[in-house]
Image (spheres, rainbow, N blue to C red):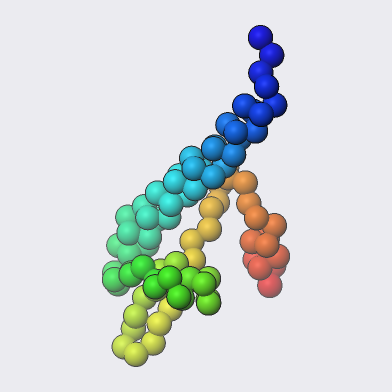
Length: 90
């Protein structure tokens, strides 16, 4: 039985928007709190929404009166945004 293109489109969007976004979120949390925080031995905190919009920062580390912003990107067998490679070259 041939599937409808509409059903294929809906399933594709569901996978991209819901499933992969959730998977990315869980990977980010495991990376930051499960690995990075332990390795560095410092507290890592979620950034306020305003910082995310203004500076593309998801988490931060506070050291005295200074801040280090963090943004976690996918690696490995995950599709990448071309901008990641452009920034890596810089």
